[in-house]
Image (cartoon, rainbow, N blue to C red; front, side, top):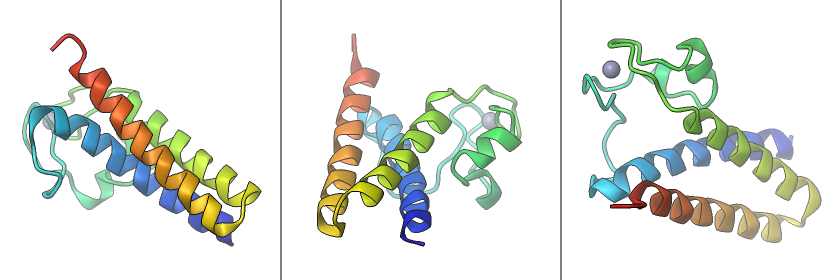
Amino acid sequence: MTLVYAALFGLAFGSFANAAIERIPRGVSLNGRSHCDRCNRALRASELIPVASYLMLRGRCGSCGTRIGARTPVLEAVCGATFVAAFWALALTAAVAVAAAFVAITICLGVAWERRGA
Ligand SMILES: [Zn+2]
């Protein structure tokens, strides 16, 4: 059961990392609902489910059809898998530390990547 929670937390933190990577370089607050960059529509709850929403929408905005980068579901899935691996292989405290460090490093690398050449 712990691994199911680890997967859900990993997916959720992957989703948070995506939001942070997109918002921090632009100076946008981490609070507030996610929205489409092109048509600016706030995403519905059904569009905020990690990986599943991307697959259901076939990688496009539900309103304007703008492509959503593959980084979004890939990062969510990788984060979910990393959390499962950490909680499977390590004691609880170490697993939490590894998971937290993974999210922090992912956000830092993602922000650096978004800012490249800026
Ligand atoms: Zn849109």
